[in-house]
Structures are given as C-alpha cells and as structure tokens.
Length: 171
Image 1 (tube, helix red, strand yellow):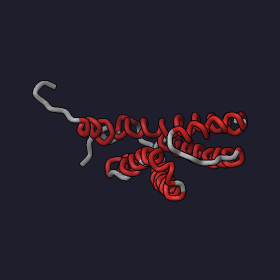
Image 2: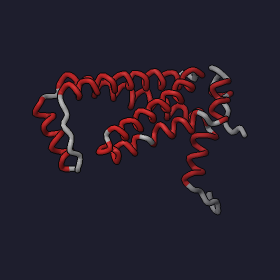
Image 3: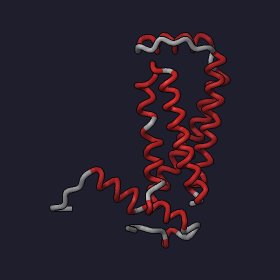
Image 4: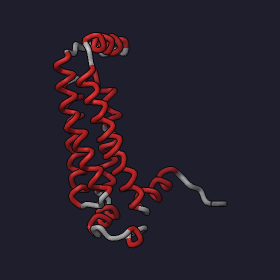
C-alpha cells in the first residue's frame, strides 16, 4: 500500500461493511461466546459461590473508588439472574447471526436498544455508577449502527446463500 494513506475508520469500513461476512462473524461470535457463554458461566459461578466476605471486599473496593453503596447478597443474586437472562439473549443473538438469520439481525438491534435503555435507566437511578456505565454504551451502539447498515441488511435478506455469493462491496 505504497502511497496510499489508510486511516482507522477506512480500515474498519473495509473489514466490517465491505466484507459483511467478517463483520457478522466477529460481532456474532462476540455476542454468542463472550457476552453469552462466558458471561453465563461467570454469572452462575457468582450466584452459587459469592459469600458475605466477598461482598464486603467488593464494597470496600467500590468505596475506595468513590462509590459509596450498600449491596446485599440478595441484590447480587438478583442481578446475577437478570444478567443471566441477558447472557442468554446474547447467546441466541450471536448464534442466529452466525447462522445468517434475519430474525437474529432484528433481534440484535432491538436487544441492543433495550440494553442501552437499561444502562441509561441504571445510570439515572444510580448516578454513582455513571462513569462505569458510560463505556458499556459503546458496544450496543456499535451493534445498532452495524446491523442497521444497508449492506448488512442486504446480506441477511439474501438468506442462507453460500459464502461465495455473499456481498462484498455494495453501495
């Protein structure tokens, strides 16, 4: 690429939009395996293994970072269950995306909107966590922007055609 200037946005565009298949595989894999399977395993471990001593250490750590809150074991277990449902949603979304299902694309967009809304509500009701939650808004925004792009919509509308016939660069 001598004489050609490449910027990160153009590199990302080449990876994610011009080669839709790779963008779907990357984001679908992240949804299914990272935010789905690994999160569910972590949440199950948290639900069944957290002790009051662990919770006390967590509250001391939060207090050291400027977040003075009181958390009970019941609250931790309730949040674990709720996030477990979110992890299952991610697994379904990711698996459907990897299978090139149009319902999965739509589900991912609506799921990301709901997730962003939930984060927004938590940040309003618990302002002490706002600086931690801000970064959690980036991934849903990426999902919404990517899966509503015209190339990606067209890719899913083509159904389960072979990879050789997948769109590479549509305008």
